[in-house]
Image (tube, rainbow, N blue to C red; front, side):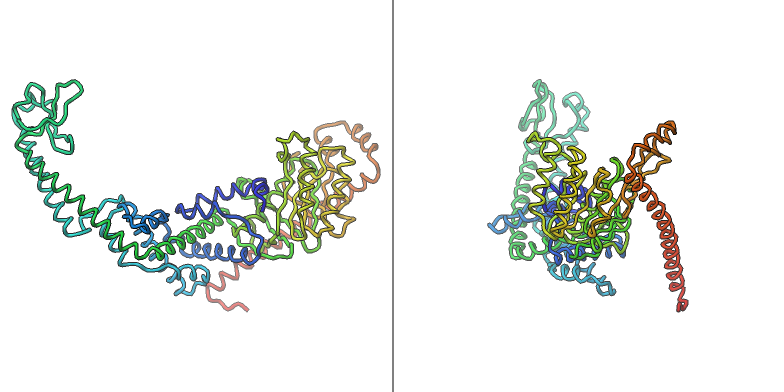
Length: 562
């Protein structure tokens, strides 16, 4: 798919939202690389893995996916014979831990009869390395600090070191408790200079304690002195610290050498964990939108029931049925601007990209969507501003490119087709462009405010009209898509509602040609019939929902239902 089209339809914003559901840099990397695909097998596979992830979330609420790290750089260091740091050891061990937990988690679901063929296959690629994992647990904490349990030698060194430090501090604290301490010391605290314990001694008493001067204050009035009585103990402490460092380096080298034997296995586990993170991120994202897994076809058929634009406020967004393919491949949405026509285009386009990227779509169950080879969109007038072209030229340049590249499996979205020029010529061009698209058997949805195109869906067997409902009482659009009903002019009704004299309205009506008036009357009649049918549908839909709910309650109570 074209990057420009993805931007126009705001697929990049969907990916940005999806990133919030990733638990690791590996999952984020997979999301950033996410692209719609036009291969139906790949789409079905991606949708199935998302659906399996959603099933797990429904059953268990979450998955043990936290604590994954990108250890690719760590493995490269091991390959060239380098040693890992403490934090790198912890991160590698954390991946081993999550690998074990995830495999057990999926295996447990499978044992309980939950069908997860793709996740089961993915989990089977997680290799158990529990002995190595336990070694790392005993070696390092989550801050990367080497633990006393890493080796007996380290534990003994640290025990001796702690005792030595205790003796040094105890001797220095005796100086602090001396009755003359407040007179001879700048502050009654033990501090450190050059990694040795010292006292802050006033300059005039520098000879009282003997020992070594390690530093002085900026004013020179305070000297940081290591008393002679603790020099030997501090020397012993430094020797023990050197031994501790040497033993830590030996431990890191030893554990790193062990890990180096399993570089392929660790890389495989890390890749699989990244895939799991990606899949569960898609599933949680779908749940947040109350989305569903659509059925996928390659017949150009779109049946989106109560579809919602995922970037609009869910509290106020209006859902719509968007139907395309089968009886008609061309939908022409007519009517005034600011009525929601463009949102309908973007909803169809964006949900198509989401479905082809393996994401669930915000719509009702039983929704279906086609896999298109390409999605083209001419929406807005930003395409050629840098070339200083007019709005019309900008759109036409884009349309020429679309007509050249499209094929029978393309979905094309035109916003305000033919706008920006003489209305009569613009309408004629719009009709000719739609006919050219139809000649290639491509699927197209176009919006226009030209009244000349209202009859297009009636005299073309491959096309249907549509409009976005306008409430004359509130003088505002309802954003409800009306398929089969072209947009009608509301100018007279709005004018009357706003108080325009009836004689002026009658005079205006007399200036409208009979054909246009008849068309508006026909559209008005169609709207009334549509509203009646919609009301009947809503009643039937609610009865069906109530019936399903009652059936489930009866079945839970073990009643026999014929």
